[in-house]
Amino acid sequence: MLKVIGLPLVAFDSARGATEIIEDDVNGYLIKNRDKEKMVEILVKLAKEYELRQRLGNAGRIKSEMYKKENISKMWFEFLENIRAQKEVLK
Image (tube, rainbow, N blue to C red; front, side, top):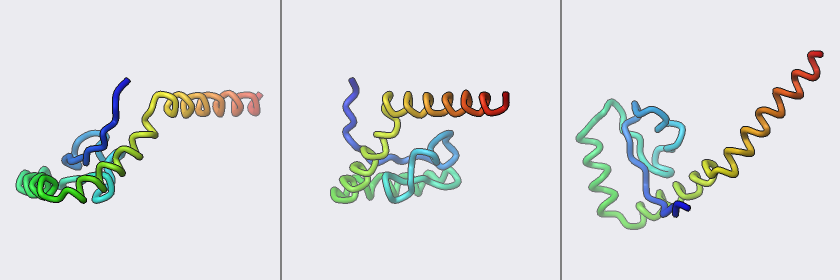
């Protein structure tokens, strides 16, 4: 079992899926326009500011809960059950 340690997330906003997972200044940072200088600036800021790393990391840990196998399985079950129910209505 993987242990979630809660690190801040930093990615370019062009990275697939990043915008679905990262909430800017909530659990990490999304860097616009593949701005490498901004990426370095953010990484240095995170290296220097312990409280910021903690806040973003804790928010990331909470966000990661929704991606646990049990939660994803439940969402799929509900989705498929909804399809089945709609199919029954259309009969």
